[in-house]
Image (cartoon, rainbow, N blue to C red; front, side, top):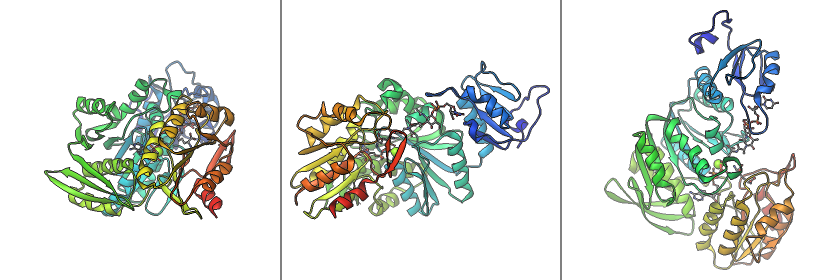
Length: 476
Ligand SMILES: CC(=O)N[C@H]1[C@@H](OP(=O)(O)OP(=O)(O)OC[C@H]2O[C@@H](n3ccc(=O)[nH]c3=O)[C@H](O)[C@@H]2O)O[C@H](CO)[C@@H](O)[C@@H]1O[C@H](C)C(=O)N[C@@H](C)C(=O)N[C@H](CCC(=O)O)C(=O)O
Ligand SMILES: Nc1ncnc2c1ncn2[C@@H]1O[C@H](COP(=O)(O)OP(=O)(O)OP(=O)(O)O)[C@@H](O)[C@H]1O
Ligand SMILES: N[C@H](CCC[C@H](N)C(=O)O)C(=O)O
Ligand SMILES: [Mg+2]
């Protein structure tokens, strides 16, 4: 591919060089690369333009006012958006059926359940998100929920080359705001819910919501389908409005849903029985996952599969065979005393509430909740998480999550301010040991916040840490 294949009117005198790839980080530029220079939250990518050109960049996508000497300046009002569109032409072709999931909680679970359902229907499928790039044979981490645009498009192209036809990806609000996941045809988009998170980045709930709505306003194909969880009292209606304005096809799910209406949900020992009204009949579904929240995600995933050609009866039947999602209400161990220990990725007030409520029906004795909060993230959610945990659990242990650049003591104190009566134990391993020692035969332990994570980020270092492994060690 040459520059003229991407840019219809090359300026007079510009060399029509061969394009060898795309990069948004000057350290990844090789001869022939098109460099995207973006103003970031930490640094201004435009400062790296000279270094990118020295490394062989042949063109730079940047704002009009950026200074570009020695390479073609591809000027844009929104450089990230134009870069995504050019890069997608270079990396194409992509899998034929691509869907996206946005929302505060439930994205990982929903893309993973969608991937599993497609696979059971015989499609070669993958998911991209917090757990990395997952196929039926492999899982490769990308480090972010929505990877950067170059990683995203090259992963998508790589999956297409491997014969993957169906991909579900997580569209995080950061990713949507930064045009990190677009440029390919997205045939369906789902909304799970919106509650407080990431206000450090977005500022207000309105801005956070607006970032999420780019999925329906701009990213989704105009003949695509919006799959909407209908039970979010504050936001479902507004999402339906966004989808309707663009005349997208609509699938709504939940107790207030019309496509898949959840009429009852009964916890069983190993999962739950769902009664669902759809296509004029009532269907019974045995879901082998616990918790109202996983029922919600399973319904949203079902909506996505219906939107991409699945037949209702087939999909509802397959729900009985889904596998648990790593780190989401995952039972790590049963203690010597007989208490089950669950690991969950709840890291917002709403997520914590959902995880505790999921375990309550299975608890005969006390529910012991252990959690912390991540450093360099929304600080306002900390006392709210403390409040939720102490209102809904019998014993609360406040400990460390990923402190990152912050003092863990300060984070714990902020949580404790909302959690009267909680016990504060610095050091996650010591705290997990205390929770497990505390639990009796009828109790349940919930270790929240880190889910599948394999490391604890302290300062700039990532130390190996896995809640499931630590729980097993402490219970041994
Ligand atoms: C706040 C945020 O979203 N930051 C991400 C974003 O950074 P940014 O665009 O603001 O970039 P920056 O670091 O200021 O740099 C500006 C530009 O200069 C470039 N640069 C920078 C340094 C250099 O030496 N050379 C160079 O070319 C960078 O590549 C970038 O294009 O783009 C970077 C490149 O892809 C990411 O690494 C970075 O993730 C940081 C590490 C991060 O912590 N992100 C988290 C908050 C995040 O994105 N989380 C979401 C949400 C998860 C959820 O749903 O809850 C996610 O999708 O994972
Ligand atoms: N539909 C839901 N409603 C409320 N809480 C949920 C829902 N789904 C998941 N949760 C809670 O949020 C946690 C994270 O779930 P999941 O990883 O699926 O969400 P996510 O949106 O991918 O999160 P992230 O923002 O980290 O990518 C779960 O462990 C659970 O505690
Ligand atoms: N995607 C979320 C994950 C949070 C996980 C939690 N363990 C933390 O470190 O805060 C974020 O980046 O905010
Ligand atoms: Mg996720």
